[in-house]
Length: 582
Image (tube, rainbow, N blue to C red; front, side, top):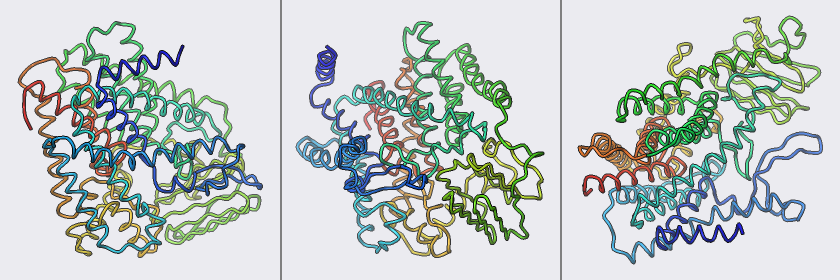
């Protein structure tokens, strides 16, 4: 019965959109699922398991070790990831054939992205890349080409779709369902961290989403990625209840409650990108969207209530939980001491040694398999079996471990923090200047521009140039290339990858999007704004602003997909409304 119902629904969908558009819709699904896939998925699988010594192990292992029936779950994940990787390789030649067969429609984005991609391909084959650096610190040779192929395939598909608004509406609904499912699973797993041994107010330093953890056979998303997806869901819910016609009170209440729950967790994740996105969405909603004053006041209530709930009763609840952590007055463990940042710590029970020179720290533990590394106060802790949390401001360090009951602190402060990762990540910090609130991005941008000038990269260095060049520079400076090898800015990335052509490309994109948003928001024909139009305005604005501190839509990924569908939806919808031909 269920299968028959699904067949009927699929037939209705095909009849509604047409067989050809239905193929394009399926192609977009598979292209979306190919995000973060790579050649390594054909030969390896990312797993987590415990060794014979009960030590957690994360990493990619050869697929030949997981072909037996007892490893069925890993075997399934392996073949899902193979399909994800092969999707674009199969779709790309079909899309090219259909593009050649049908009459070409002039498309500004397809034109400029194609030039952007061609310049990257030329420079990619022209410049030599050290295999040792490329293998460990940037995408593999084929994966770099694969990312460009995905971008071009997506744009060709969008060019071929006849009724873009209808197809994009279906695709957006699919994305929201997927985002809710995926983020819901992650958030449910994050909740216990609020009540763990090291109690915490905020989830930015999440152990579940820490580096070197895996989900579905690949590296798990960072908390910033989960916050971004959650914010897109929040946009969808708010736009739905305010711009959807004939919505009843019960639906309004349930969707508003759902949005408030997501906002609660978005605030709890303390992702600066998501909080900035929330700020600009609120600006759009309150000042640019044409809504009456009552609706705007109600939005402010829905915005403020989850945040106040988080800051007052929820924090109070966390404070009153049973005290499972070590109190300062009865703490009798090892204390960190040091002069001029040359630190030495020894702990008999855990066999730990901490040594540091000029803030370059290394922590090693034989029995606990711990690694701590830091350069210039940018610290990273990896704890494989003890669920450790580290925070550092200047040289005041706090380390807590669940199973070993350790607390390390700089003796100068004479205080042991109860909540090592509980501090709010302020949008503008006053304690350490610009480096703190930019998370080191300012230094990365300066270093990137310096590389372009010194190496005279007038046509760039090819795809993923930042990963390679910044890693190469880090190795030359004796630093760990795993940190700071992402330019974290769409303009900088475009220059690194395609030089002056890349700069012209990104400026054209920004100008075109700005004009499109302006025409959409201030159109003369005062037809009521639709729910999907409001949502896509919000998404496009957020993704463009996000590209100022991330590579964003210049690299194939979630941001690129969101950028492309929101841009083409607004462009097509505006053409229908005002009969403007671009």
